[in-house]
Length: 483
Ligand code: SF4
Ligand code: SF4
Image (tube, rainbow, N blue to C red; front, side, top):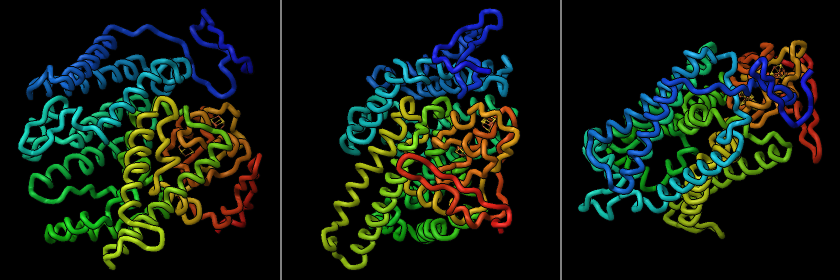
């Protein structure tokens, strides 16, 4: 029986930590890094250093760029290979030492990383000139952005922008950390397939295809970036740009509308929100791969759940009003209706939600607040998918309560802060708007209690959970209530 003492003790004989509490079965034993692992880490550090030097204009040239990106890729993937494959840690100890490491336990390393990431995002969104962006197109880029010019010129015959640099690094992060994730969960088919899926959609649809479209003088378009996540889809300049681009542009416009009114509800009905949040979306892709070491940091408190419901639905209402006003302005020529102004609303949304929330807080705070802060508290697309999932979807996580040993692994590693254990202990299906269907709760369950299913629709799931002031009431639908 695990102790409830807060102070862990180290068992020298078995090289394992004891008394780590009810919530975790993680083995926190520390093993020294092997030589190949150290070499791979050194290679990764060299890649990062070169990018850092490039930021100050000290390194330039395509060969150095290839060397830097290659070092990151080989070093990162190599480390994961030796760590998870050679040590055979996969499955056995997938979260080894997580709650004791400074980076993943809100220690000094986590704070330093969060500050650096936040600083980078602030420069990216509001001060790209400090990353080397030229003041106008006649001048050459310098610094980090100039370092990526050769790659950008090769791909789309245009100099790099801050978004090209960001897109390249973002895709690289999903790719490297995606391979690491696959090695970590190599015994879990669901995790392998959905990770390959997010890597494919990020590399093909979010990065390469839009760049190639620009090379062909077509509008930049990410086919999987659906309104309202793509909040500017109905903006005047965007609609005009698509319409003026001929048949392909009109097709893109049609595809965007089709994705909103047909694709989203139909796929969510059959598969839940996971089809988007855990298989397709770039934000989810980064959260699931690069953000994986931080998933346990999600706040599981009832107040966090309450805040989540207010915030995410608040953003959803904001995006609806803003979009309605933008369309109103387009069709009437009037920017103001009552006290609402479409220009102000869209610039506020872009600043507070599109940049500050989704970028700076959403990714910059990974090491402090967990990997799905944006998806859980802010994303309006997740809000719509969540409502559909809760009331109109066949997706649910079934639980075999008799097998549950209440270890709490599922709740600990739920990145959306869902107390899965509470459902498992009651043998009750998890039908939650927030659940992104990542399947990690099922992957870390030592008893095989949890199963992600697209079964028959539960028609009375509205009555399952009541959030009250100080407690959550959970009701029990009878089998015959399910149709
Ligand atoms: S409940 Fe399970 S599948 Fe849903 S978000 Fe949490 S860990 Fe992922
Ligand atoms: S469902 Fe599995 S992981 Fe969750 S508390 Fe029960 S045994 Fe542990």
